Length: 434
Ligand code: COA
Image 1 (tube, protein in one colour):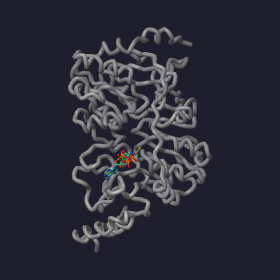
Image 2 (tube, helix red, strand yellow):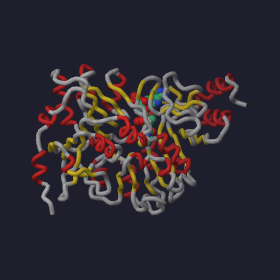
Image 3 (spheres, protein in one colour):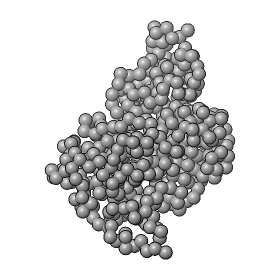
Image 4 (tube, protein in one colour):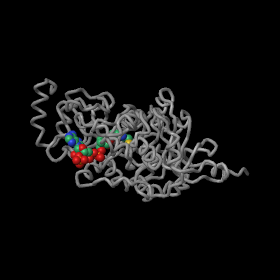
């Protein structure tokens, strides 16, 4: 068997040395969450802060490590963030005018990367090399294979605390230009605040999910509460964009066994995982979970191949047409489209499938999330033509295929009682309550 340890030793270096290789106007690619390389990028940002670099752009998705270039507006133009989906630091950077966002359906990111971008370097955090010279991309597959194809160089942070995903993306030492060793715990997603309202919503949705269904749960407290409400189900399957703690719980309590899936039977399928240490432990050396590229996992034509596909996602506001905003509060940017539309469409095309957009009826106790019209500046995530079910603590509205008057009536019925008269008045004024 070939010995790859000498190749490894040749490429092993320091973050400072890798940062010293970076030149003005480089495009740097990183993938999601725990796969990012904060040590290398911080060293690059220090060079930018010292005036040694300009025009460097860094693409990310769902940033969870604290990274200077996302926190320091004086670095604009020297090292600038471009997010495929924002979170944490990039959300702040976008709202403060020193970070950028690339609008996209997540499933399209790999093709947009292949056709639109050339990376000077792709940086990724991986688990230690195996005896065949491969590093597991651990918690993330996502668009990494596309960035690897389009990158002139590859830099790694090798972290023994990264799990080894046996059914996930891999990179070989022969593809790598430089690597550093780090040893730190992976970032953890704070558990969602599950309260009585989200439990009520979770209960309504659980009633709609038959045993044997295949589920996708999105980001946020409500999808987490739905996960908790599914523990009494049987033979559920998982085909999802983000693998979360609530899914590990459903597997461990026996509600999920993936036995009824039409594709990838016996395996949970996801494109990346983010949550607590419990998830990272679950992934390690586990053939029961497949981490696959997002252009496959989030393709509605793939999603719908599982019967009874149920997607559950959150939103910030919905108008009486059923237009869903899940990524901005007015003009204030919050996140991105991610896979919401991919799963709404995939679930609706599945035999027996349903898609739920769920949220508490009010924000901050006094703002109705069901609105006569969207707040100026609000971004439409899921269109009126795709939307299926909307759920609040007051019940479920089924909008798909329904006329506008029925949509308005159903949505007003599940709005907070304090806002129903006003919504009815506005709807009548517009002549949409026939
Ligand atoms: N008006 C004003 N403020 C609002 C609001 C509204 N209509 N709706 C929510 N907010 C506020 C909340 O009060 C909260 O404020 P806080 O941070 O001060 O507490 C904040 O906005 C976040 O809202 P919350 O409902 O807690 O968000 P969440 O963490 O549950 O996430 C989404 C909800 C919609 C942002 C999230 O699901 C998302 O990014 N979705 C898009 C991507 C997606 O669906 N992908 C699916 C596949 S994974």
